[in-house]
Amino acid sequence: MGATQLAGTGMTHFQPLTSFNSKANSPYGMPIVDDCGSCKLRCNSFFCSLSNDSLRDLDAIKHTTSYPEGALVFVEGQAARGVFVLCQGRAKLMATSRDGRTLILKIAEPGEILGLHAVVGGTAYEVTVETLQPSQLAFIGRDEFVKYIKTHGDACLHAAQHLSRDCQAAYDSMRSIGLSHSVTEKLARLLLQWSSNARVVDGALRTKLALTHEEIAQLIGSSRETVTRTLADFKKRHVAELHGSTLLIWKRAELEGLATC
Amino acid sequence: MGATQLAGTGMTHFQPLTSFNSKANSPYGMPIVDDCGSCKLRCNSFFCSLSNDSLRDLDAIKHTTSYPEGALVFVEGQAARGVFVLCQGRAKLMATSRDGRTLILKIAEPGEILGLHAVVGGTAYEVTVETLQPSQLAFIGRDEFVKYIKTHGDACLHAAQHLSRDCQAAYDSMRSIGLSHSVTEKLARLLLQWSSNARVVDGALRTKLALTHEEIAQLIGSSRETVTRTLADFKKRHVAELHGSTLLIWKRAELEGLATC
DNA sequence: TGAGTTCGGTGATGCAGATCACACAGCAGT
DNA sequence: ACTGCTGTGTGATCTGCATCACCGAACTCA
Image (cartoon, rainbow over all chains, first blue to last red; front, side, top):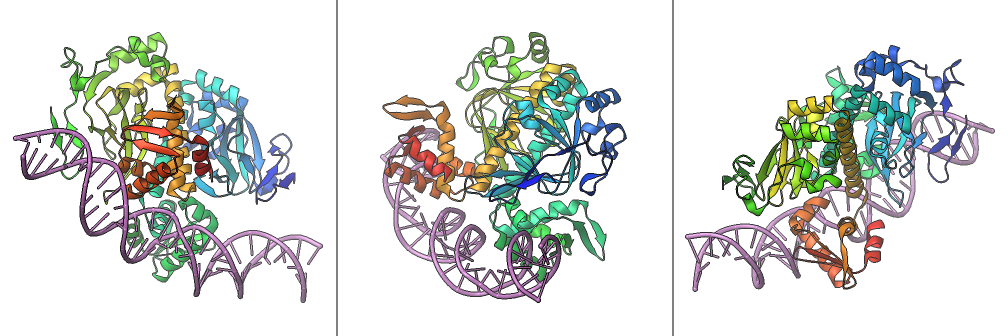
């Protein structure tokens, strides 16, 4: 599948499948969406809610590519070659340190633009992006993108709004990581964040999230073991429970109490 | 001077001096700059490097106001009433927790725009801004500002670039706070950051920064005491020294070693 | 001159959580 | 079935640093 293991890490490098060679059959078990005009994301994503004219011009300069799970979209320190719009799938934005430690800055959902700061700011990518699932991304080269937002006022405004969102999310994370002492607090806060798109089933909030304890630890700046222990504690107290990839929250109020203190 | 103490905190609330009533004599011992066209900041600030047309239109909608040291420009949670361009002085961007803990997200320097994310994103201010020195800020109301960047393409691009910068700075801080274990490491990194605009005097890097140990602690998410202790340690090892408001770095290389490990 | 305030320096103490070191379960591949 | 691998569950240990509790220095203000 054109993917080779990078030495030491569990990450994969690969040749992305472009839409040219993959239109006939869906790669990685994913249907390809190739036309922003008919894309179902249009409603909730920034870039997909452009004027029809701008959208058409965007379609003309983008290239849709598919990635397997665990693929590195770009790596921090690389010169920014363009932006990626996450059409399908999920990806994690990470910062890594020399000694191999990893901090997950955020989990990107469909509709988000990746690499926007670096391209707009004209700097190197400052984060590493790795897909968590088979994903589809639309790529737009740096020069074309800059020219595009220069000539399309609405797109520029959308870009700015997207950036402002990212900033706010970043400040939020900083608040969470920097201001809370206990891991319990940070974990509770995280679960509550995720619960926002949860459904009530059998008197409990239920939602899906395919993250390992290790990844959760990297999200809150803690260690795998303490995440395991803290989750076990939540379970014992019947507050919340993580079964495989489904999160169950029994006592939201209590969780909020833990998160606020 | 129109400043009243807020209960409990060391912060002050006040009536800002607008340029209308303060043109004659300089408030807070500061000369007023009222015209962006002749402002010396033009070279290094985003907004000040606009086209002449855009600059003139900006001048028309902005109001210059002066603030004393320790003034609260805006508070997190407040509805965003507009953006502030920091013309002179310095200010700290903070996040506070319910129990009174404070995290300083960044120190804003002249030329920076404050409250941009909230105004562009249409949300409440997500940080608190407090002046560190007597400062001069240019205020632009929310609606006027949004209309302005909608009609001035170059300004919109500048706003986006400014936001991208903020994002990167935020990600950098997260990396610093989240990935390093020891306070020594974080403090070393911080001193190195500051050393960027330092001069060589007597074989040492020398720069000014008027921050208390308490504030440094809030910058790296630590406690005042450990900052004092760690600085004492640096001093004993002749690596760096903080005398009043002047920072002296004797062995930059060693500091880098401490910051990277 | 003395009182009040903010800052910096230092010791003693305790604990949350990192780290190490296992053991086990589930799953894929051969 | 056997081997490997990834993810989870748990105990034991060890330490960095938050926290508390002081004290002295420098500065402001009446």
